[in-house]
Image 1 (cartoon, rainbow, N blue to C red):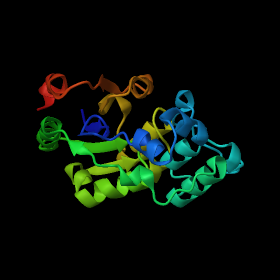
Image 2 (image 1 turned 60 degrees about the vertical axis):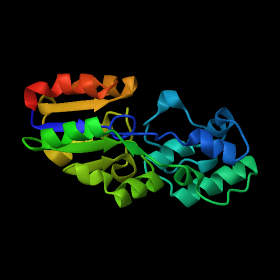
Image 3 (image 1 turned 180 degrees about the horizontal axis):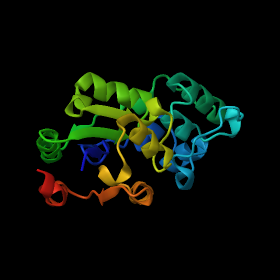
Image 4 (image 1 turned 30 degrees about the horizontal axis):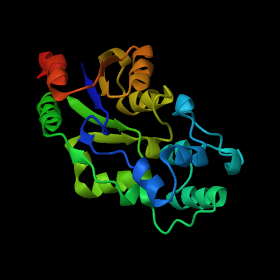
Length: 208
């Protein structure tokens, strides 16, 4: 292996889901929140054509891809729902907690290998992680909102491979999302579906 790619949310950091709290603050259910965003879980990661009328778009995925700003996201949300949004709820309720056991694994791997973060995120969450120094754990961070592609779109990994100059067979990737793992595997990347730190440590033991 030449490169290890770690997902951030629900792998390195927990307590990352904020949609329910954001929906509650907006006075609606989580389902209604996603419907207002026209969020399509099945099409998650698909790069949106910027020429599309934003009124017809999945603005959650566009936010993840960096195709709309935080202000543009909430402006469109207000137009669709009639709900007045006083602040960025997605950022307001974001308070991730690092998994110490996984952090230790990353640090151990970095003694011998290049380890990067490959994460689906949005600008406010990216800024919070950055301010806390969470990304300093890695040699580099490839964030969806910065590279313009989200998992499970295979373009996400292709852009990382291009940036790193590493072939898929020389990469180890771990993620908690099965769809992301399937997409990674389809490219020939050694992929591990993360469930807990102990199993991950056993999987990477040959390189520790």
